[in-house]
Length: 179
Image (cartoon, rainbow, N blue to C red; front, side, top):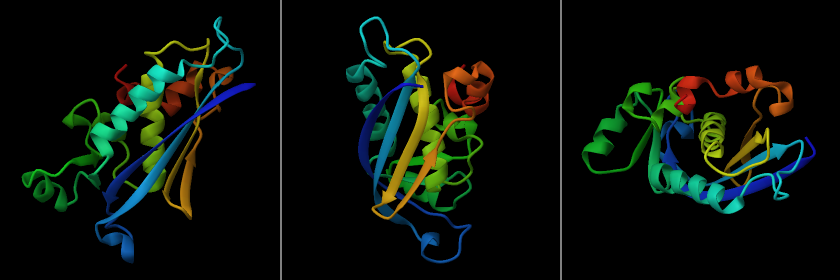
């Protein structure tokens, strides 16, 4: 790839990792940052990798509506039904049957920072299909920062469209992108 664009957005979200020992077993929040890199071998006819406006709007809408000022929990977490019963926003990991947004995490049972990076990669790859972009443009990297000292990166298998459609299908399975 020779052309890359980056889009960043922040959100405030709680999560809990009951499978880990220590502090992360408790419900706690972070000021998260997501940075998505879109890459293309060649620019589009209008000299862009992707049309920033529509892509940013779609990504930010997903994050704001699904994640911001809510909690990310595993579907089996006993806190999930309690929080939802009290009107709290909860985004569940590990449940494909709760609608199109949670299908992005069907195979990700817990909201680790690594899993959040994969989920955001899947979401943004699906969003990319609906905006003007260069031929072959795809998500090449997602970086999620959960604190100023902790982050995770996700790079789809094959690192982009030059490796072919099979690599994209492995990184973004059909069940995860509505296809």
